[in-house]
Length: 213
Ligand code: CO
Image (cartoon, rainbow, N blue to C red; front, side, top):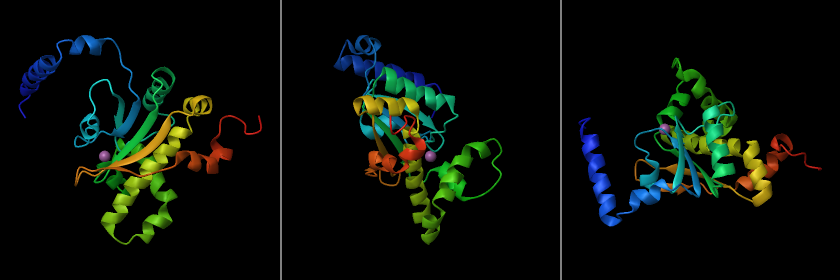
């Protein structure tokens, strides 16, 4: 891909949008009202809007290596707070993907320099689910399963956030969903997690509102 081609593409894209709706950018500039917050991997193959068939303005997006929700990460915390308190999104989606390089790195202990601390939470997911993962003899299946378990753990991390809990108690939203994108087929897979049920089990540990009050 030629670098300059990007700006040629941009002009083409503008012309296409305006040919369908001359007011397109005027409308876009008026504000956003997305119903979804999507947290996915930075992987260049996993383009959020494309795989969901959504347009600009329809989904608030945060991406990082291996779709992590780390409590000390100001970036993800700010995104979640803004999405929940101000945009009032109805759904938060954690989307992992098969063949994720970050997850693969967590399966292969080695010194990754600056990446070590980022990968640590992924290694923690591996440790937390060690028995299940080690019972899977097929290496590819084990890798796929760690991708899925990482999504589930990051969904857990979302419900540990105070803004999410507050909104949840007040309005019942946002709903939290765990997805995996299969780069091998293009399929978007809903893992069917019931995060309300999952939270019920760990509520005595992570609830930020005392249960008896
Ligand atoms: Co990835």
